[in-house]
Image (cartoon, rainbow over all chains, first blue to last red; front, side, top):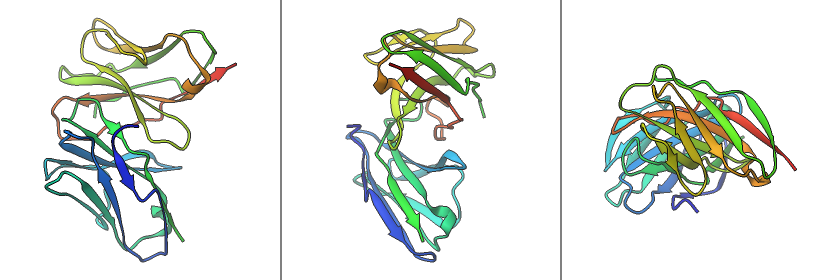
Length: 112
Length: 111
């Protein structure tokens, strides 16, 4: 158990819809990272939050957004969903960038 | 971006040591060398990381070349559970960025 909790584990939704994925980081970790893993793209970094503020953006689409709340949990919002957004979405947390990062078990999103 | 080069796949026998190589010739002074592994249908799992000196933990050892341009992850006694994709990643300490995953090394363990 990595200590990082992601919900839900599975999500099936239709094209055009909006979903919210939730992540609770390990106790004491201030940084939260979101990743997308699809068969053709591998693991891609989406966005980083540190202590409530956006710190870095990776390959995140404009239809996607995230936030980190005062209790340090984070949500990833995916809107206007397309078939190609079907993927595994992982959340990770670390004390700071460069320290060990711990990943959740992921949310499997299927867009139909 | 600092990049790493790993073999696509490696094969080893159960209960034998495994040495997974990684080249990172463009490493900078603030880059930590991280190793993660991913088992099928699971999230990536932290294995070990280091900056300049060799590191040991309960899972593995990390041997870092003196010039830091290469490193080796050592699994001392492989088990079937160690079959996974292993990623070697450079991550800037205190930086504003996530981990950049490459294709990694697919480690196959033969019983």
